[in-house]
Image: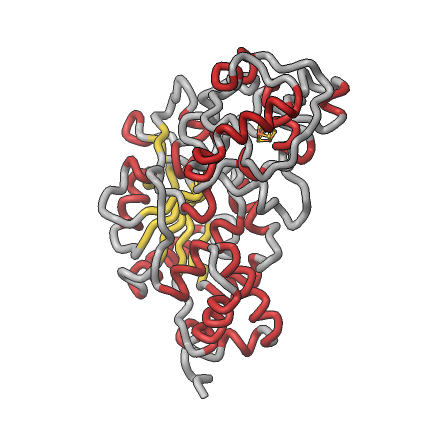
Length: 373
Ligand code: SF4
């Protein structure tokens, strides 16, 4: 049944290519990544097996390093092979496409025509606008023209990576090509930004799968980022947070405190001002992520941090106290610098010992229950 249908319309295509257990596992993982329950994951699996059409995806590359595609290729829960071959129909992708030249252009235009109003456009890279956009041309067309042409009949646009979201490295001062993100140019479509340099592939997969199965796009914040992934700061769930609360900081790269795994705030960590789920959803199915290996967060998911702020600069602390549920930690140092941490003005000049920390938390208990930390 259904064997005469083209693959993208065959409701049994999913289950014919993957055994049921693997498929269920993919759906449960995807549901979890977008903040849905296991029950919802099972519903996703049932909906997919019942015949949800694979959405057509057109993926355009502009000014970028292809790191976003690379990081997607290295995801494994679900891996990109399953994503591409079973969940979506990746009809045009300049890096992965076997075809080239006129054949590739034909694939692009056939998809745009056959899936008019249905396809998802994914954009990787920023768009140069200076001098008529001459700094990035593909098939004789500027990136600006290609974006306008392909986005015109797209159902939605996903800007993957910080370059497509906010301009990225190419837009750093003095921005010689006039690079901008997708939302600066496309004004009449639903746009989802998945920033990061590179972005976490789970955030992209979760967004796509919500669209595929539920037919909706995720809730977005003011920067058009899905709140399920960018709604909380890295600092809130950082494994080094206890050291921050206790006033234990690396003072410079390679010092004893750095080797002890202390907080990286003083050497420029942007985690307190960076909305992202890196601290809870690591990259590449390992525990490896920048803060995990001793490098401060560079704020790559934030429009005004990445390439706009020096690596060593510290950011303002908006929520200086830890949650009241944190156990007290006795600091090994006398106290911390109010200038360096930005905390002292709020806690009376210094955090001296765990007793002060605990007392402060008790004082602010009511407040802490009402605000994010
Ligand atoms: Fe983690 Fe950075 Fe916050 Fe320190 S400042 S707890 S390293 S996110």
